[in-house]
Length: 224
Image (cartoon, rainbow, N blue to C red):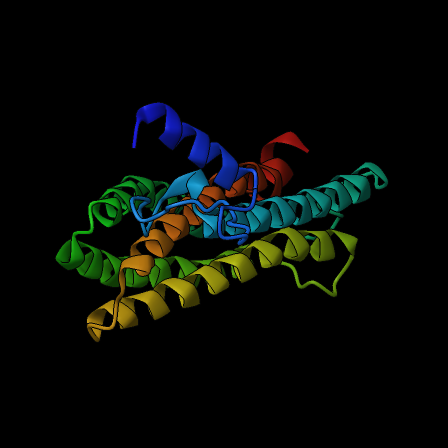
C-alpha cells in the first residue's frame, strides 16, 4: 500500500466513513505509550489536593477576618484582665514546622524517583515529626491563657489556632496511614504520587500558619 493510499484510508477511518465491506470504522487513539503514573498538575489527584488547599485556605482567611473584625470593635486587645499569650511553645512549634520543609522536599523527590526504602523511612520520620508538632499545638492553646468561652478575644484566638489544628490532625492521620501502607509492603506505584501530593499539602499548612502565628501570638503582645 502506497503512502498516499494509506493516508487516504486513515482519513476515511478517522472521519468514520464506511469501508468497502459497508462497516463504519471509528477512529481510535493508541495510548499504550502514555505513562501509567504522573506527578504534579498532570495527575488528577493533584487537582483534588489543590481543591482542598483552596477551600481550607479560604476557611483560614475567614477565621482571620473574624479575628480582625472583633479586634477592631473593642478598645483593648486582649481585654483588660486577660493575659497576653506566651511565645515559647508557639515559637518552638513554628520553628519545627519550618524545619520540616526541607525534609518534606526531600521526601517528595524520593517519591518522584520511586525510591521505596527512602519513602518508607521518610514517612515514618514524618509521622513522628508531625506527632510532635500536633502535641506542641496543644501547648500552644494553653499558651493563649484564655478559654474559648471567656470572651470574644478568646473565641477569636481559639477559632484561628484551633481550626488550623484540625488541619494538622487530618494531615497527621493521612501521613500515618500512608506510612503504614509502606511499612506493611502494600504500597503500589500510585502511592508515590500520593506521597508527593501530601508533601505539597504540608507545605501549604506551614506557609498559611506564618501570618496566623504573627496575628495570634505576636499581635496581642507587640502590635495590637
